[in-house]
Length: 95
Image (cartoon, rainbow, N blue to C red; front, top):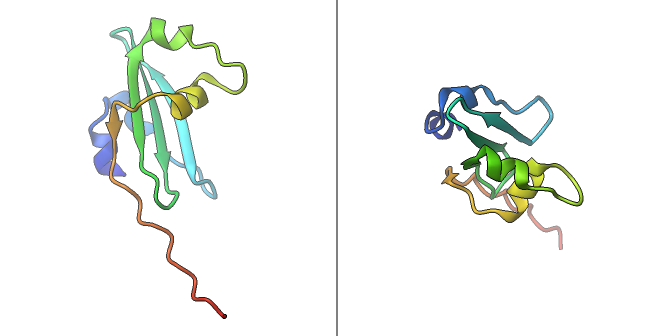
């Protein structure tokens, strides 16, 4: 996770996953007129992701349901992708 965050601008590196949560997503407005949307996850089989876009592109997104960050997460291709979290271990079967 730290390796993934080190690839992002310093403003984005403060994002952390809250205790008892598995996901953190937030957007960061940069001085240069761009926006970074960052997703951190500890869910098995998923990986951290980040999207980079202009402020105009970000504010032009008008989702019918949910937030802009959620829309970006579900519908756009990430600019950066981290390493995959290990898959969930298989439970032994009783039958």
